[in-house]
Image (cartoon, rainbow, N blue to C red; front, side, top):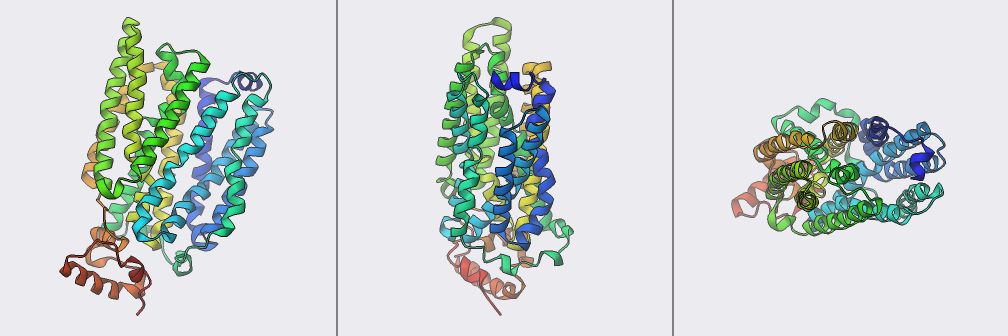
Length: 427
């Protein structure tokens, strides 16, 4: 391939660093997200992130050494941490309560639209012999950021920004109360679990996995990868419209337990192919990859951001989301750096680690993840904080509690019909 030749055939360790440095950029930028999001606002932080992505893509495209390419990936990761953090907050805070859950879930599933474009662009440039075989997909990375730079001006700023006083709250607020410690555990675990569930093997190293089961033709690998991205988008997008019917907790539990079973089957089928060489074993692995991603997309692709935003009070929303995205970046760095080396050294035995880890994830989800179905943001706060819940700010807390008591007495708590009134309540 032209890219391999251009960068002198990087080793597995360098390949892992090439993918992992993206997460390093996110980790470096994320501590500043609360300061920027609550200081200059959601819109300006998104603009900053989009600008950094655009600059990173330019550097990536003109890279002449692997060092330049790695630096460009770092800048892109830095920019994405700002757009990825503030976009879901803005969606949540501008959405009508009736549509909030669906819109925040759809937001995160749209990642697959970019994945589809990337997969099929790579397939389309496969036969190109010039350097543009890898530069074309690189250039296309800038298009969403360019669109965002122009269209963000049509979006209003969040009404919450004017009420937040970030500097007056210490970071210990995240775990100061039992309710906040519960939120912190969910925010941290959700981010880390989403990246260490095994989907990283499929997303970033599917070609290594396919090579281990006898599918070595580049064209066949790219076609399978392209079909998988379309499948992922269809499942994740469809799931977004069921969350208010099925609920968040059942989806998380089904997804995590299902992934554990699918990974177990994939390990057995891969071992059978290795020992016997029967093509049926290889085909079973392909089928189980699709089964695994089906379960993953039931919850972890769409609900990850939306769920954390839902359980967070607005005055700490940017911070809990930062915790989640830091955990995402940490998990992504670990898996992106370790996966290629482990797959090369111990091959399919590496899957056993994921089976054990997924079983542990299932226990944590069952034990700690709270259902938010058909509950307003205020009702969710009551689930975590009880009588100490802060509803719409200090001034609104008293009236909010009174109204929630009335709703509870009338059996209407959690219907979500008076959310905006509560949030704007004044003494």
